[in-house]
Length: 549
Image (cartoon, rainbow, N blue to C red; front, side, top):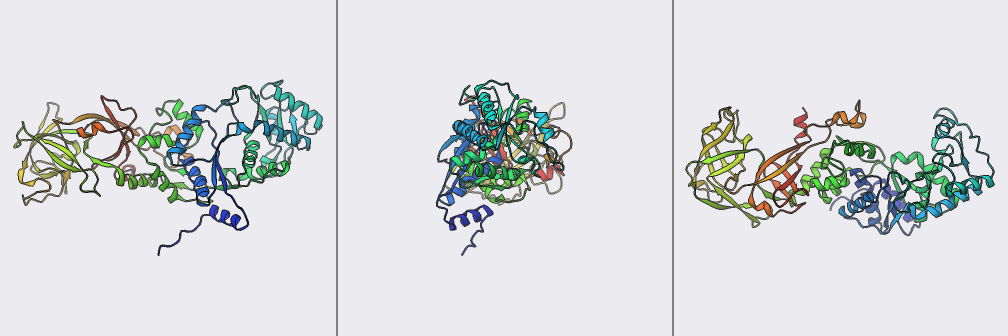
């Protein structure tokens, strides 16, 4: 009998709540639509939706759209597409902007309770009055305004009477609190900006800390799951709910995903896009979900990754190699096999009729011997340049003068000689083949240790192949000295003109393949009817450790 999997700490909390009488689990995923989702969001999505699924609850999708300056409908649509691609369906779709009227009334309620006031101080003055983590803050000169004056000023702020930054609404909590976030935080600011949903109706917008917990409460969220950087925000989250006397949503925190050789700050990702380090948000070197999708990762591989890293209370740095391992594990079961030559070298079979060709059989799916594809064979082939060595090293089992090798799904060949051009560059090699050594019916009695892939030159099709690698050379970018862009990997994208089997001409965008001996690839959206483009998802083995030594 298999060992029962232990519960993570969030599951333990939920099971305790259920044992104490909680009937329904309600979670939410609340992204701000100011950029594309990245792999860290994938973990948060998985945590929220999986917990709700496990305990018979539901998950809302709520867009935290309280900052009209940075938010766009494009980001809203990309977020929805990413969640659907991951295989999750939200129960209801909400926006913080749906609650602007209610949130305004909540703010009025705090003013009426003497728990909020309008402050005319500048942002610099407010920051100075707040003090430091080791020194208490100082009360604002506007802290003791009357309820009536605050109501009047707040109403005028809503009506657009004041300029951006001229006034703010602050909660009246405790200027001596050791938690800086409780030192009269700003809960509303003036922004004369067009909102992607409410247009120009509002020029007064709630801050995240004010909108977030109240939105959770409005939706009856039972478990508001955030990452660890929101731990200091929890007392403020609870304070607002308590003072407003609304549904008691509660916040729980888990460790966010930190990945090696990766940045996941939206600000830095936006900089990579705007400054041309990458081609866009879905550039396959980016850590965005759309980029992983384009690169050829599957939803199942990301689910497997999230499952393996688990849910923790403590921050740690996860090796991106684990994510690549999950991609290999999943694609090995799904990707059809094919032969593609990335760095072509002509191989001429001298004893094979140059006017003849034949069709051999190659496997598509190793797990299913009956699933085969037609492979064209002729007297002229392309092989990888790295599979030939003029002066072979010890234990070299590929082609060299006088050496034999098996051509995958075909025959054994022996290298007779090679030709170079005037500049000394290798242009072609000549081999003889052993007719009796045909794969599947070999009666030659010859044993060879090496097998290489190839493509018939007569039938080969040109294609562009993009060899993607890690975008950064530094393992822990956050801890690296200097600017993060100093560590861009100059070899993160290498484009090659490859020779592919003609059967690949029918490949569709997003379709996955294992290029034998080379790795896993998928068809890119830049493909046209004239030329296919393939992206390398991952190599067959982790080559980074060897490369970085």
